Image 1: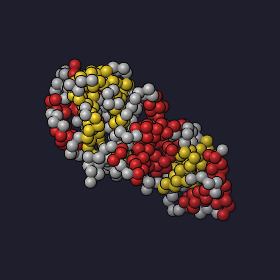
Image 2: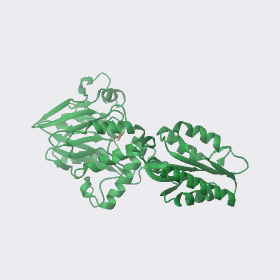
Image 3: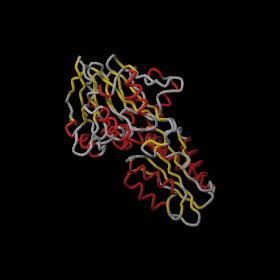
Image 4: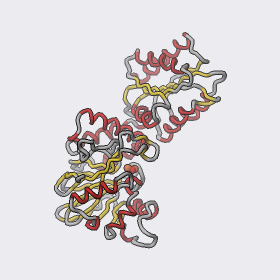
Length: 415
Ligand code: FEO
């Protein structure tokens, strides 16, 4: 496979990971994920962001470097915008093939190169890492200059972005990324936004939201401030380390990330309701249908997700963007239905605060979900409609109340 030209001096390399079940060990990637790296050449050569030894990523990258006539020993600098292992897992082995290359990263990144990546045998080559800060530049010669901007906590504390001034390419690493392999069977080299159909863009939009909700959502305030740092930067291309390279319409992915960040803390969420439900024998599901009927009667869009058959990764994406949630589950052994306990645990970890919400559910011979639920959602500061529980099969009176609760929740969203 060949590297793809962005300009005469900037090239994109990528490996599509298509058979691995999970990203970060537990987020499903049925459509794969790409690991993108970049070559920038002046008189000196820089490799921006690396990869891990995952499927055939090392050999894919090797063949793309060869397509540019670059040997590893030709690489003068390895720029590490972010040290998580999907970008650095191969660093230790790769560095052995280019022992004179200088590693450039932030001060916190430099510590991780040594202590997390164990990139050097102890006591050796400690001077081969250069720590940079915002405003520092690296002149590669021939008018090609890289500048560095620290963007902490997007999504690790050491993260930075690299901008190449002559081409206007911003190498943003995880920011502006997405799940989804970028190549296709017909065109494994595909990587640019203008090489995708409308339907393929819809797919990547869905996968970028899921990626954001899973990986970045907790750090939305840092995403906003990172984007603000580039407000005056003449960006022509967004080159992330996962997903498409945006050369035709970089504003699309920037605005998409700004929109996602605005969902944080119940900010500018979509005026829709995400109903998350689990049911042991169908009694809670009957109640869900009544609530949905009430919400729809007010003209509000509703997305209904059953758990655990809907993966938590997908639930997070839709719950993050929705202004309101319905949490529907039976009591299970005096407590919450266990799959819902997991979902609410994730909501807390990801700080899904500020939602409007309604909890409903059935119970068998005793209730008890309420206590555990209240403990779980108190830190989230949700604006809740009065919850409703019933024993076993809901009666007509129960269903009437449930429809009314749905209407009340919809009115809160529409207010
Ligand atoms: Fe793509 Fe946070 O690593």
